[in-house]
Length: 446
Image (cartoon, rainbow, N blue to C red):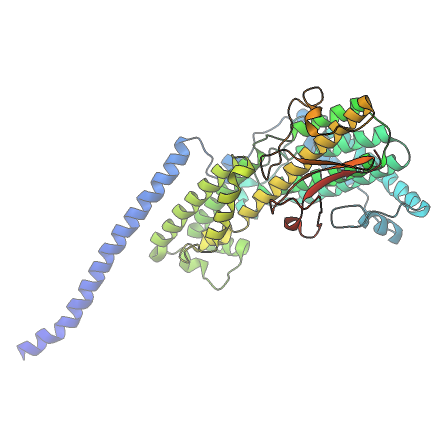
């Protein structure tokens, strides 16, 4: 009978031993992962790196210096298209994915009327771009739930400016058209200080809108305006070499840390931001899985640090590592669930940044070629002729680190970056698949 009682105790003792061992292992794992996370965060904090969305927010700006106040007034004064004619004209505004607008007499009349209704808003934009500082009142404490209503409005204002520049050009007001393009570029620059990736992508989109209009203006304009062209080159110079892209990735890192903090504190907030996708955020943020969450967070911080370090390099030096990074993202450990949810889209932002740089630099070269033509009567045989009198140095193709490809075409020229595929496609450009062609700037009339 005694032996039977002893036998019955064995399973209980085994279960107790397993629980004890499990508790010891869990405690050790929780401690070690906690220390690893603590070291990562301390190293960042000691370096003065912002770790929360509030810390990453730009400093306040006095009202009298803040361009955002004028932009917000412009938002309220914007008149959207109402008639079918206005809608058609507005939506036909030229972009990389659209056909050029039909500048028929009827359309011009509609566009002129539409711009007249938005004259007050556009005048406020001009005033705003004369201010060097801009800070919109964003609720950074909301992390990934941060509302960004101003970005859509800024893009709409950019389209209005491009439409106005196009109309001015076609009515012979070339100087005014170029100045309007300059205003549009400065408006995009107003988003420099926002440490948010989507804000920087919108900034680049505004540049693209204005640069496309400038390309068309230079293409159809035979007159020479060296003074304005030089001012625009300086404007484009100011758009380069800015740490806005790197700072936006630092902002994304802070937003990611917000997500990890929220999944511990209030998982439902994270679920609203990212969707459930079959995983219970409440379970993932539970104490039971706390060591896994810490491992995930350490992994996230190390991946982000690599990404931020790459953003400080010229793209042609980082391109291979960025592409390898994108491949690595496809095999993120499954237990690093949140990292896999946050990171995948970030690698693509590098290409968008490089494309934006390629267009800006091509624009500088096009303006410099126009200045050369104004003085010499013909375009130069090669780009080296532009230095040092017009440009102190030649801008390099961000995809290769080499000179842009330049060719005379009849009475005009083409200058281009080889783009994503790193191949010379003879200036061919595919607006729907940028990765398959070059990034050209073409001027045909001379």
